[in-house]
Each structure stands twice: as structure tokens, then as C-alpha cells.
Image (cartoon, rainbow, N blue to C red; front, side, top):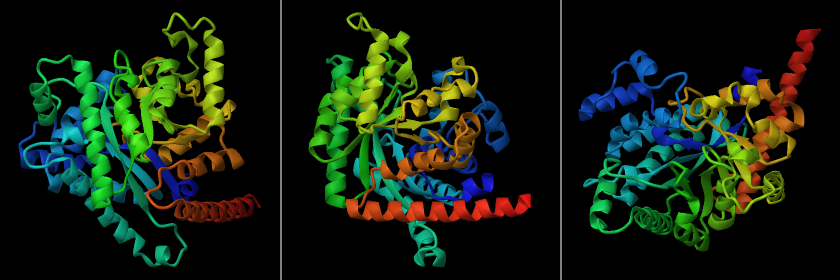
Length: 407
């Protein structure tokens, strides 16, 4: 089964660049740039930083304090982006939407546009290498495509980045919440300009960071600008907060997809005292999401690591999402921090929720159908069809092999 999953065309719609840096590269860059790490060996990093389990989301996020400093030059951003693309290609991921927060990387040497150009350059180099292979050019294998999702931060403080420090200094007499919202608005305007003037494959806008105390609605102006300028929207919501966070993301921020959405069905996490029928609220919200095919970007391993209170993987709410016939797609979140791959995540979902046949095929197809594909709609439809054709060919091939083995 693992061989089959590795060979079929796959996608990843929710994966952070700064959480997916090769450990060997991180060590090399850190030594070169004089960055402190808890260890300069892969074994040491696996033990001290990128652990098998974490205490909570805060513990999980400590990893980024080591990876982000290693992505502060055009050279390093391009290198890590190229390697990230090649790691995905190596396991059969032929479409990926890489996301990151450019404002973490802004400094005296690089602005938003140059940062986005560096990431694009690295990804495109890998894309060209792969797409020039004979089996891809012949149509036997689907080509590799990618898009960039730009993350704004729900909140930030001093020490997050050079840019955020400067931003806070420039608005030192203002309350923090409007400053956070203004930073998001500034970012989305820069990204729309970079997309339209430079032709960069910026396909979506995201909001990341701690949900509690930082409502997504605070950033409505940035999302309204994105919406008016034909940019897709996704929002981290329901990862560490309840259904209201998801509702706000959909109704106020125009979210086409939801990152994580784990607590969608948790009525006890509804905080608004005006909502009396909590179970009814959850049912209506799930129905609303199902009707409009708002897709949930499910990250199983990451959820188990950031929220150990779930207990065991079979208690993950993906089962409820499947029962409610929601549009779901399986993602990694962070390949290095969570020590995972798309193949591992799919196998985990298959083994846990007994996915097979049309159900499995539908989930994998959603990863392409609900993508923010950078080309035209006609090009996207053609690409999705080629992916499904490849899947069905391999499905038939492996079924016949299994039948012959049993004989």
C-alpha cells in the first residue's frame, strides 16, 4: 500500500516553508550565518528540537525560532525553497502550495518582493528540472506545479523579526490590535502588487498565529482587499479555538478553505453567551461548510503534536468531517517539525479511518480540485483530469498485481 501511495500523484495545500527545512541545510546555514542551534547534527536536532511529541502548541512553535533566522537572505531562501520542492517531487507530490510569512524575513537586505522572488526562483528551478524529464514531457507523469500562499500574523511582538520591530516603533503610540491589522493590510497590498506586476504565482492569503484573544475579524480589511483583487483566502481556524473562529473566517474573511478546523464540532468551545443552542450552531455551521464546499486542510500528525489532549489518533475529528461529507484534504503542515511527509499522512488517515476506494480517491482529488491553481480554470481542469487518469491507471495496475499475488 505504501508503494501505491508513493507512486500516485499527490498534493499538499497546507505546508509551511519554514517548518520544512532540511536539517542538514539548517545546520549548514546556521554555521555559515553564526546562528545558534541546540545542536548542529541531525541526531541532536531530532532529540532537542524536532521531537516526536510536544507539550503543546507553544512548545511546537519553538522550532521556528531556529528555522526562521536561517531564512534571512535571498540565497538561503532560494536554496531552501528548491530543496523543499525536490523533497515533495521525490515522494510523488506534483502540486504544492507553499506558505510562509514574508514579514518574518524582511530586513535591510530584502523586502517583500525580493523575498517572494527568491522563493519563486527556488521552486521554479526544481519545477523545470522535473518537468523536463522524458516521462513528464511525454505525459506519462503529471507535471509539477506550485503556488505561494502568503501568511499574515494575527499578532506579533518585539523580537519576532526586524520588520515587526520597525513596524512597532513606527506606531509606538497606538494600541497593538490595530497595528497587527495594519501589518496584514500592508502585506496583502504588497503581495497583490508583486503578483500583478512581477507575475509571481501568489495564489492565496492566509492568517496564522495564536487564535485565542486574536480574532480573525480584526484583519477583515486585509481580506477584503484580497477578495476585491481576486486572491483566494484560507485561514488558520479551529486549530486551538472553537467553531466561532471558523465561522468568522468564512463569513468575515471570505475563506475558501480552513486550515486545520479541528474544533469545528466542539460545541463546548463556543464562548459567545448569546448562542444558546450550541449543538444546533455546530450542525448549521457544518452544513454551511458542506454546502459551499469550503475545504478543510487536515493535518493529522501536527494536530496530535500541538494538542496532546486528543489522546489517540482514532479520536481525531477527521472522522466526524468524513461522516458529515465535508470536503477535506490531507496535508503535512510542517514536514520537518512534525517529521512527516504527504505519504505518511495519507497512510495514517487510511489506517485510522479505513479509507479506501472512492472515499480515498475523492479526498486525494479534492487536493487538486480545491487548490488555488496558478493557471486558468481550463488549465486547472485539464491538469486535474491528468492527475485522476494517472491515479486510476495505478489503481488498476496495483489491483491486478494484488489479485495475481493472492493466486
